[in-house]
Length: 238
Image (cartoon, rainbow, N blue to C red; front, side):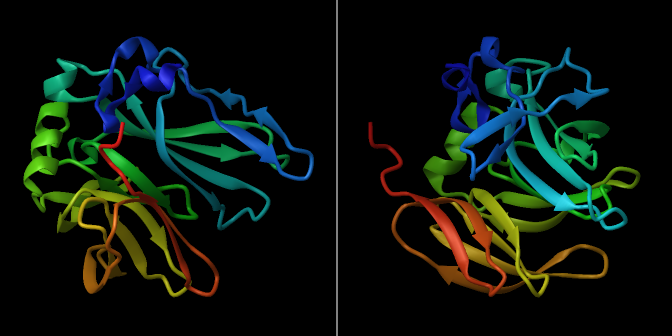
């Protein structure tokens, strides 16, 4: 029910539904799931997730880092200012059945975030923004007029955030390929942009893959480099 109230990326902005999400682990062999306790996390702000990523820790193979977009309640007028979006970073214990809070990253360049990929050191990440402006009205205008003004941001917990790719049309899913290449779905352009990460973490466009059809959303890449992309065939279908 709360998802029908608070989902700012889909212009659902009733804040009574905000802050009530949770993270869980699913066991496919048993068909069961378990909520993960969030140790040392400030529950007063709550959790309203969008995209998230799970990455094996580089220095501790039995642990993982979880990077989660948290669309917190607006600090102003939600239709104008949008959600107070941040990225939460957690680290698992060896059992994998609880997550310890590591950091919250807050920066104006996080914007209206859609999806995220994290680094194995637990300190940096790339994320896509699916609107230039955070408010619902501005996002609707971007979609209506087909503006290529969304972007990709790279953030570091100590060094802050910077824009590393621009002129995307409603950037949504993001994934890293087996050779380090980065794929980004352009939702309403129905295409996939392929980037190469540079030494300063800026992204150089190397290819554009036209898909056609409906709006593209989540994206995943397997070990052989094959792409799997979710598509919304009828965006405005009731």
